[in-house]
Image (cartoon, rainbow, N blue to C red; front, side, top):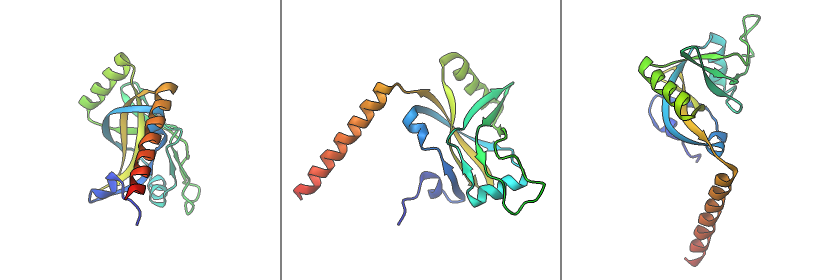
Length: 160
């Protein structure tokens, strides 16, 4: 049986895609949920699972947030009214949340990264996080710790 993610455990949510590189490249702090402005063929493509957040990032344009570099594949059954796969998509959040994020991004050096995309009660949502980039030394240290924990668990399992 496949392991369910956090978002799939909550009733009414269905995971579309997850950006696994985020936790390897960044240390993620505070997380937020944002709605997305999508076209009809984008929603249908999301339901088919044609979404990638590998190279995606979130950026302020004026005083609004936009998802840049996110790829939503063209919907196969659509005709000339199909959407552009790599267009920028506006994110919808409350003004006080936007102001809070803007202060941290401009003053404290955080970046905004998309963590996952999912449907919640029929609406497409993006989980974004305030993150700081990790140095190579930190990544190597974390990998080393994970390997030692795995080795300890392996030896403890053999003793039984």
